[in-house]
Length: 238
Image (cartoon, rainbow, N blue to C red; front, top):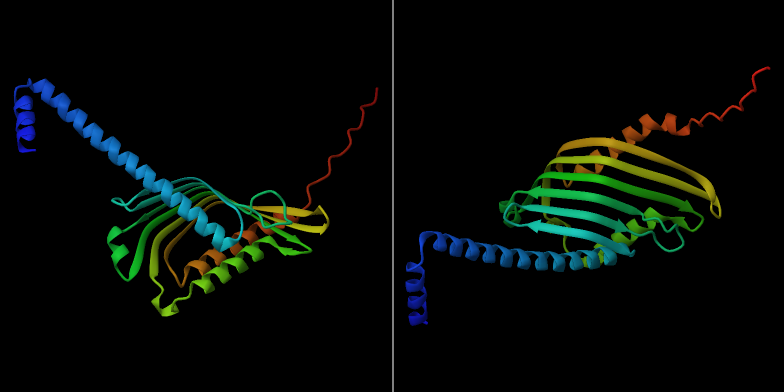
């Protein structure tokens, strides 16, 4: 081993300066490519784990286009997340997410509380359907509550978190009420942008609910106002 290393060192020393630079560049490129390949393999493994966990927790099929994790920078990016509807509901997804990015303070991973500096959610679509057999969102939330209860654990041991900024953009919530079969009414609430700051595990749900309800009340009169019927054209007199 030592003699092999010595021969390599002698061989490198006898190269010209530009050859040494090329050799160094090739070595660095090889290491970067190798680490990048290992990182993508790890991301793919985490993708499968995330899909499996979400399917178990929600009881519906889950699709995930891409998951990227950079542990050194504390960044997580999720792209193309779909949660299917429960059985006996429409084939359209219950939840469709274009992109989510999360940036956290890495040292907080080893502390008692998780510190997230920024969460950005873009292109979130939620479809709520009310049918005779129930509500699709309520069914999934009940399944999620059962999953949490099956995990056990003491509530006092729950890890706390703090979110500096939560940014929502291009959010749509569609509510459909089916009266008979596929007959019913459907309305869509659109949220262009929403920014919340200084959130914790105790205030996240309440602040988000308050902001969404305020936006719904603002848009409700417009949603309930029927669109004017097109007037038939009257031919002009000759």
